[in-house]
Length: 263
Ligand code: KIV
Picture 1: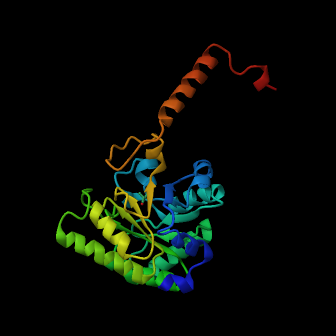
Picture 2: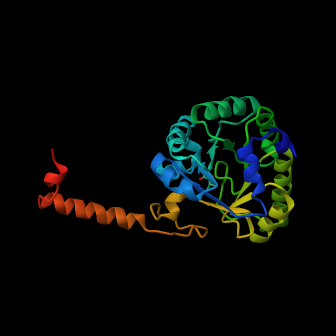
Picture 3: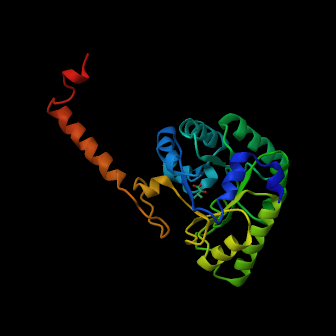
């Protein structure tokens, strides 16, 4: 396996979690959230989902390299324990030369541990180039938001199943240290997870994956997405709303600020 020789300790320890403990992974776009979730995560992803979650973009295609770098610099300040992975945005890895130059820029400016990019066979040569240059790469199969024409789950048709399974083997051979499986049918996710030696991280890809990732804003109820794969674990929207209302009431009735909060 390529990663054995080239990868650093943090990455090899991450890979070793496969078949030992479930891998916990979430997204973060800023320092404050990152520092809270870091304690409980194995991997924190600065996903290009920030385009839709924070900027209301209709697709991740509009996310730029500079946006990813600035958000990742903020997240880096909150992450001490987890592996920090940054998404390479759309049109920043169209060939090996472009990918290498942009990945080096992301790593040097954000001090992240690895980058993630979307695709199978098409990106194998690019992944090999990055890994040859000591840049750890996470793969991403299933729904590929940067090129998707629809957001239906993957793996219903046999041809599609075979392609995704083959792509997962190609990514492994190219040297990725992990693969995100997005909205992949359960039995296919199970087969891929059994087949490849690197951890699979599922989002809408069943309990059979080695780990799970969710967009943190979905998990805490700050984002209003209604996808089947999202489970809301808290209702931060309500908490922010309630705090704002209390603040408003205190200001209107001159209960805030008191002497305690004044100079
Ligand atoms: O952009 C993102 O947040 C992602 C995760 C959903 C895996 O790629």
